[in-house]
Image 1 (cartoon, rainbow, N blue to C red):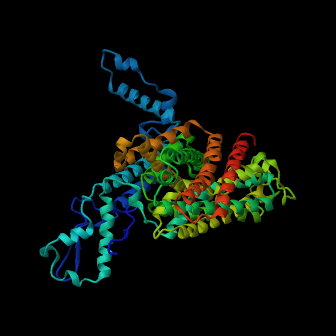
Image 2 (tube, rainbow, N blue to C red):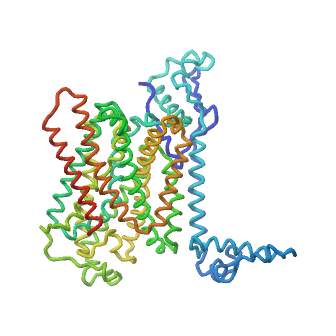
Image 3 (cartoon, rainbow, N blue to C red):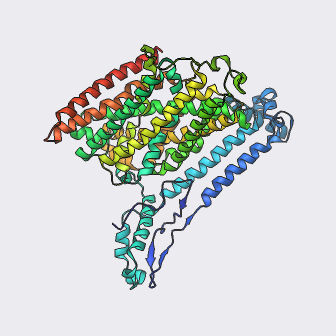
Length: 613
């Protein structure tokens, strides 16, 4: 096969950029066998992003916080003084006599100060930080938009080469070794995909290798998943907790296999298509709506995590930022540019960073568990509030009871990646149910190991006082934990686009279902990007208004998450077996029905644990 996957991940708008001249990608083979190409790969935009971020960081570092209240040279005058002493003077504006220049300046500064007060900004450092985020976001989005303005997609690379005349190709065209032609076509294929004005799920088929599959699924599961496990272990012993973790890990691997097998049987690539083939089109909106609900609830909780983590850790870096200001800064960059990407393979680089950050955090938790710094007379014990201080029981091996539903609910949803199950399946290269289950098993077993280590280390350190976000228990003066907090915040930022892409595709599928007359219109890239911005704005607004989205996310996860993991895959696979397979495995059908019943029980248990415990 001459045409292959791009040698450079074309969906990395702020890491690399391909020149977007109208004729880019046109290649010619000279008489001496050389390949000439006018699409020049360059890294200037990436350099601009780095330089801009560095300049904004330096500007933030140069602004002394005391200068914001004393020095008249910072932004013309002190922002804090402006907020306290200066107010807009509408009388000066409405007066028939023209005000002097000082009055104009005073009115303008007062107006700006009142706007800044709405964001609770009291420091020029905060403005520099948000300005840096906005600058990087504009550069990244500009590169992304520029990358979409490429050549026409009417002609394939092979057709362009076959239609070229001898003056373009030369007589020695067919003497070029096959490996060079394969590499050349691979590069043009990536450039051609850049030039497309439409995007469908077919464009992402087999674009992700096994390593990218594993790191993406790990990032999909682990960063927000291990933070509350020590809290869930308070009413459950070590042995029952470990058994529950292994049990739900194996169940989730199987249900991912059920989705991949259903896709293979129906030859469809999303839940709506599989449901239509196996059950009927009238109810094909049900699984898509479930995915929308679970993704919206989880992305909302992710943004609340991001806001809370960075609001707590930014003061150690010299940024006294409010929760809403911190939230919108990190939405601008890097969350928004990442959410515009369509393929999971393009997100594997940030997912790799998240993997390293999680492993570092797990290592720090183990270190603090064994080094005694949070013991009775530990170095950091005095810095912790009493309700977060260590209180480890002597015996906690076999505890189990009704309050254990909290941990059951956490672990039942801890391996939730099934909203992207169809996407993982179709984007995996040389995909098959066997390969999907192998990659899924690797990712989920690694995740289970991290869950086990962090759950035990967190509980053995803080015991019954373990918080729902375990990093809150650690001292603000602990430098290793502060680095872990930053890493975890960024890893959740990297995890957010993985779930967001599932939300966007599910919303598009719903729109196509309810508005079939304009269904093809939703394939336009600009419409999908606009939809992404609207969805991100909606989630961010909800996260700003809801300081604690725990109940909303808990109910959405308990009902829709359980349906997404257990009910929908089992229903689809059973329907595929009954509809398409002549050799029906009765034992497997019984097993699928048992899993369906377990899913209903877990939904009820999740609602109870969210509302009661």
